[in-house]
Amino acid sequence: MDPLNTPVRLRGHATWLLGQASTQGHRLIGERMHAAGVTSRSYYSLLVALAESGPTSQADLGRRIGLDRSDVTAVVTDLEERGYLERTPDPADRRRNLVNLTDSGAKFLGELDKEVVAAQATLLEPLSPEERDVLLGMLGRIVEHHTGLRVSGTEER
Amino acid sequence: MDPLNTPVRLRGHATWLLGQASTQGHRLIGERMHAAGVTSRSYYSLLVALAESGPTSQADLGRRIGLDRSDVTAVVTDLEERGYLERTPDPADRRRNLVNLTDSGAKFLGELDKEVVAAQATLLEPLSPEERDVLLGMLGRIVEHHTGLRVSGTEER
DNA sequence: CGACCAACATTGGTCGTGCCAACAGTTGGC
DNA sequence: GCCAACTGTTGGCACGACCAATGTTGGTCG
Image 1: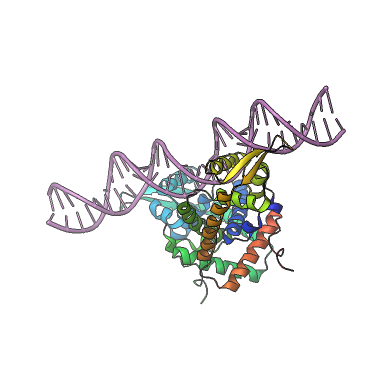
Image 2: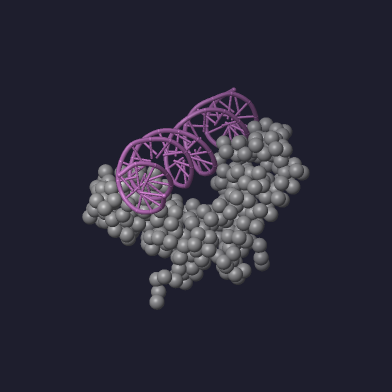
C-alpha cells in the first residue's frame, strides 16, 4: 500500500478512517497475542467473558462475544487442551457444557490482558488522555446507537 | 450476538469499539452497495482512485487503495465487462494496462458515491456536526501516526 | 402421558477477503 | 547484452464469519 497517494475522497470518509484505525488496532493486538501464544482475538474475548460471568454454557459465551456456536466449540476445545478451562456437563441441564476457568487459565488471561491494554496505549499514542476519553465516548455512542448496546455511562456514579 | 451482555472489559477497549464501529459502517455501506449492484467495497475504492488520477496502471491503482495486484485484476475485469472502464495497453510501457474510466463508469461512480455519503451520515447519526469533525480529526491522526499517511490538515490553510 | 417445539454442542461445509507464489513478458540501468 | 525490477495474470492458502444438519435434552401443551 502506498498511503501517501490514497484518494482524497476515501480518506475523508468516516467508514474508511474507522476501517483503517480498526485494522491498525487489530494488527497491534495480533502481534502481541501471537507473541503470547494465541493466534485469534476470539480466544481473548472468550476468556474475558468467562472470567466475568463465571461458569456458563458455550452458547451463552458465544452470544455475549458475538461468536458463532460452532466457532465457540473450536476455541473451547483448544483452550481446554491447553488446560486453561474445563468442560463439565451441567447437572441441572444435560444439554449444556459448563465451561470453567482454571487457575492457569486465569493467569493466562492476565498475561493476555496486559498485552491488550498495552496495545490500546500504542494505538492511541497520538492522542492526549482527554482526547482518548472523548474518542471512546463518541465511539461508544455510535456503537450503542447501532447495536442497542449500553457502552458508556455505566462506570461512574 | 447479545450486545447487552457483552463483557465490560471488552467494551472499554478502543480496539473493540473501533472494530464494532467499523463493522457497523461496513454493514451500512455493504447494504447500500449491494442495492446498487456491487458486492465488494473494493469496487468503489478502485473507481474513486481511477477518477482522481485519470488513466493509470493496475499496479498503481492497487497500491493507492491497498489492494493486491491479483485482486485488482479481478475487479478491473469485472468492471470492464460491465462497461464501466476500459483496458488499453500503454504504448509507452508495454507491460502496463492503461485503465480508463468510461462515461457510464463515471455515472455509476456518482451513484455509488451518493450511497456511500449517505451511509456516513447514518453511521454518525448520534453525533453533532462539531463532534463528527472532532472524531474524523482524531481518527485521522491515529491513522496518520501508524501508517505515515497524511490525512488531515491538507485541505485548509 | 405423548407430541411437539426450542435450545444445546458438534461436525462439516460455504463464502468473502487478504495475502503469497509462480509465471511470462517487458523495461531500464549497469 | 545482462540482470534486476516491474507488470498483469492465474492459482492457491488461511482466516473469519456464517449456515445447515444431526443427535440429544428441556419445556410446554393437548
